[in-house]
Amino acid sequence: MLGRLGDWFSDPTRWSGSAGIPARVLEHLGYTALAVAIAAVIALPLGALIGHTRRGGLAVVGVANGLRALPELGVLVLFVLLLGLGLLPPTLALVLLAIPPLLAGAYSGVAGADPGAVDAARGIGMREHQVLLQVEVPAAVPLVLGGLRFATLQVIATATIAAYVGLGGLGRFIIDGFSVRDFPQMLGGAVIVAVLSIVVEFVLQGLGRLVTPGPDRLRLRRHADGPPAPPVSPSPAPSSREVRP
Amino acid sequence: MRAFGYDIDQLVIAHVLLAVVPVLVGLLVALPLGWWAHRSRPARRVLVPLSGALYTVPSLALIVFIPVVLGTPILSPVNVGITLTVYTVALLVRSVAEALDAVPDTITTAAIAVGYRSAGLLFGVQLPLAVPVLTAGLRVASVSAFSLVTVGALVGIPSLGTLMTDGFQQDYTAMVVTGIVGSVVLAFLFDALWLALGRSLTPWTRARTGV
Image 1: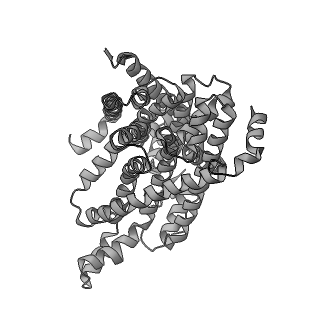
Image 2 (image 1 turned 180 degrees about the vertical axis):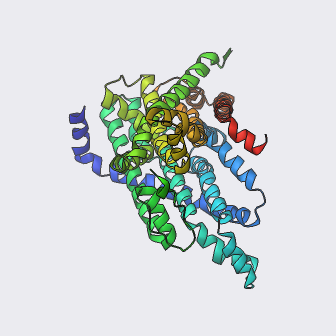
Image 3 (image 1 turned 45 degrees about the vertical axis):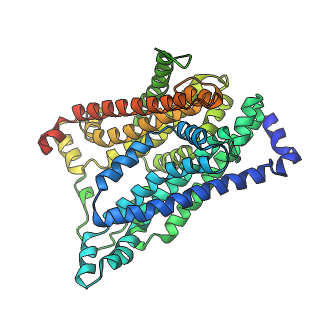
């Protein structure tokens, strides 16, 4: 099987034309970028506003969790049955699935901004929109990026399924391969989309590290690697290690 | 019960089995791995990024990989089951490790002082305290499993997803909606079950909040 997979990849016709691997990768990235961008335009301001006013927070969490239970395949099929074939219906389905993680990230990031900093901002006379844009939104960046990462991966995975309802992209290799029982083609498509997902995740993680401010960066590292970070503030850190026998 | 020419009961049973069994097996696998990641820093350095990468692989791709890796038939439901087990393990290993990390050392020390040792300490003190975090992880894994089972229909594995693919082929919206609603209802039912189970295992959390 692996030999036949090698044959599939080394066939030069795979690497050119509108059904070739490069074209399918670009299509897949294009659908993903389009859906995530539309979802971000809707979800990020809404999430930030709800996080700032703290009104409707429970509803956001409830809706986000409820949407998570929606089967992606069903949503895609339903949108196409109701709205017809083409780029728009599957893209709308992808947007719908990308909204919950982005909304949750923006909401929890803004709502979780240091209340001391928010009070201080009001105390020095900032207006509400300044508090939001200059204090809460910067503080929300790490969680927003987390939501963005999750939404992007979700959309890449769902765009693969969307080949079933006529979208292009890398899912074509898997769906078309299955319909003619061409397993090397299915496997080839699966390998490419898996590699693409891992590369995108890696890039977004790196981006997250770049834009996360200092102390948070240390905190994130500590979670990722285990060793405790050096204390970054004089505030009393939990020193439970000292009581270990 | 029959509808749209399908035995709905059978699709529901297949759907539930394909979602629930992998989640429970995944929990059983994730517990020792998470404990290992909690105890050993090198193990954590391997397990946490590895599970992150596995969780990143799209479900349809993973379903296609399993027959190649394990030699199972391409049309076997086992492929979907193992895919969902892999996701559950990937999701829970980190949760288990972080839940065990979060048990305060004062409690561990006190337990050791009153005579708890290795296994007793783990099963009598540390794991029970980790239950709320575990329940939260299990609920996320379970809800997404109920939705991901439907993807198997794309490679011929029966579940409520079959109503979605065949409904699409027959241009039959009611059939697709039935599949979606059924899948969501099942996901919520089992979500409520895990929540109740987690609560019954941690009576002290109720005593504190007075519920």
